Length: 550
Image (cartoon, rainbow, N blue to C red):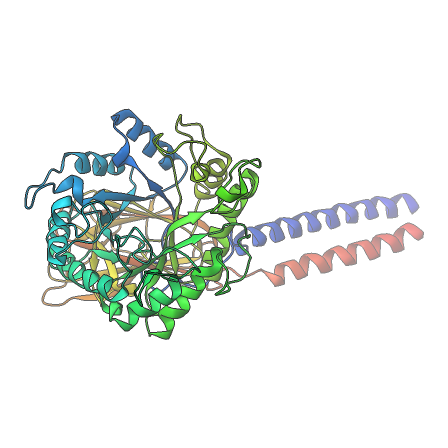
């Protein structure tokens, strides 16, 4: 009897172990389905904020060798940097009125395009014939309409290639507003003319205001009641009082860390990274909260420890701190501020005109000889990490979206966040990686709209119509009508990471406006199954113990 009982007990133990194995497999499968690969975050619904944040400042206009320009931009792209802040000097392009030389700027634009970087074009530095002060290249033009003519020519030259321009730079300090008192009202007058001419040339262009130099000091011009340098927050407030609100699409701001960590709180009497939040408060005070803030110059200086203290005007941190703060500031800034978009790191690489005996030499991500610094390596780790969209609504500019082919921005109030991207190029693609159990594409239907093929994880989508070859597609043609629609392309699928690909067909226009990722609970944890296995395991152990003791 004892032998029979123990054999029976051994069989019950095997049953219990099997039950626990199935339970563990069930739990493991549920955890894989129900745990996002990235932390969820609130939707970024303010225009120009649901973007890849990694950018840098470049100086390709100072580089005379083509191979060095190419290598600079290639290294930036390999590090995951997708935005290029680049100055285009008016004085180099239009040396004489209405006589334009585009050769250098064409080469610069082509180099950035080769590696897929989007350009933010800074337009300033008038030619001598246009300046008030002939000896100071940063001086504003004597006739603001001359600048408007240049902006018009530049925008028309690069329509479809450059989608963002910045109007001037740091007009709140000397010498960026020339050898004269700074004047927010005059700058706004220049901004209004530039904005009107740019939008007339390309209505889909985004115009950035001039970034302001962060400064607490206020310097008075001799014998004048006007400032030579003006506190950035006061200057921004004065810009709004002068009517700037309707004449820029994105506020450009500087955000240097100096001697503080990224966590150092904002304070009107301190210069630090979070000072940009005080500029945001000015925007909100004037009812301008639905605009993004893009960081024009961002970073920490890593001068050597033996550098003269009187020359450390940007403060100093160690190279490991520079690398850590740069990456952490971007991550925490985007988590904290839903109104922030691009962070243009100051700077990627100089061309050799700034020497190691100057403190600003030590902002660089890459040395003149192309040796990457630690900040380059840390940014590369963060910026190239695979991006997967989490449940929620996302714009067409989201980091989890990969665009291939020719897509152009189109500003329209009918689109979410006021913008969509459009194409008429057959074969143009949108690739989206997401985590969830459903996805909808936000698209436009209209009389000129065409067809696009859609796949989910490389397969046809059962919920969409199929062509004669068994390929799933979405037909966007709608005669005499035009409206935004949600196109379900994935419903009740296993909750995990998926890839949706949209390929534009042969005819018509296709407009893509974003997407919605769902996690609606179609695949909830199977509690009944788990409960049954658990109960079976407990009963088996109890019976086994009883038989063994007998």
